Image (cartoon, rainbow, N blue to C red):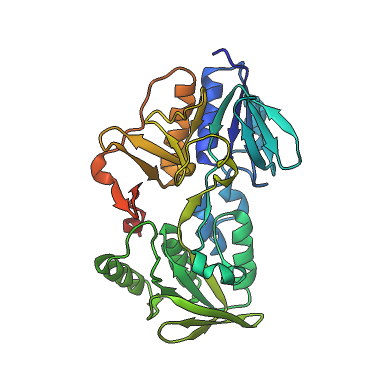
Length: 338
């Protein structure tokens, strides 16, 4: 491998899998992980159990600092990439530092999605994407016994169950954009209501939020298109959107995420993208699809690294497991796992 320095943007499962694969195959290559969050690599799917007190905070973290030191992988956390110049092969960080690269793997993940019509209430919503989010939940739940979960994804279902195990009163609103990007058909809604009710979670009548109002430190009034209710906290779970805004003017092909071929290559030489931020071409479908999930990200991180080193490994997925949602091909069955 001719290049000397490979930079990985992101510090999630795809990033760490890629870094490990690079180091295992090229011991002399300089590898740098640049992560926007200040947290070490963590397992986001364990956050509900942490909030419920079933895990210690340290149980969330995957890779100890000593591992990176022993593998000679440089990790820079709390460093935000704000621009990429592919002609100069340079990254620009938020504090104006320039970082040069010979090869680049983009695994910048995704952020919590709040529908535009609800963004005015964003300050009243709690999300659950990072350990910081989890800490806010832990603090809030010390003074409230009732929670409304709005929207839907696998995290929301698991979290609702975790809250119920804490003997909290849990309400669940299947809002009209719930389970995005999965269409909320009547069949899906009926299945979800049944599974929630089996676990003692009440599904609220109504199809959308009209208004939220903070009535006191631990009381939020929620007005739907049906009956209003009051709870101590409102959790927003509307799926994720790729965190690629900083790349829009970079010259990359971007639709919902970064467009890559079945080998995770962008059209720039030695530049790959993997995980939640990528849209992957499927030759059989002749279309792009997105992948959701921790294990999927790990596998793609490995593939991106190995292909960067000269491999020719395509991301394999059966067309039968990909469906069309809002004009976008999606691979996920997470809601069925609850």
